[in-house]
Length: 130
Image (cartoon, rainbow, N blue to C red; front, side, top):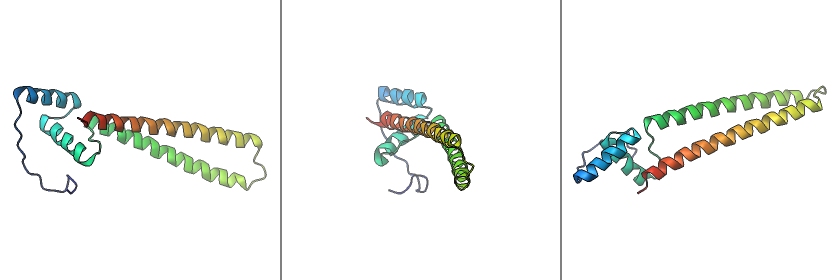
């Protein structure tokens, strides 16, 4: 099975009772999908065991990744500054404590971010489990 965005799509017909069709439409609508897209996402989630995000969730993950990228840039800049100061005899004990505090705050922020994204992915996978 190749990536779904590369392979040619083919029709696959299923027959549902009116009650089942109504339930699919309700769940799909609640998730921000059309009925057809919801069924496709359900199948892909089970075949690939990967999350199938709706548009709003994709935006949250994208924003999350942008925040993480910003934190990485800040960390890289801070690490460079620490390297430059390490060679200087004028680096005070107070500067080292502030740096440690900043690193701890950054670590806490990153940990919270990672937990939030993991929870989103876990919730998404749970949504598609039968």
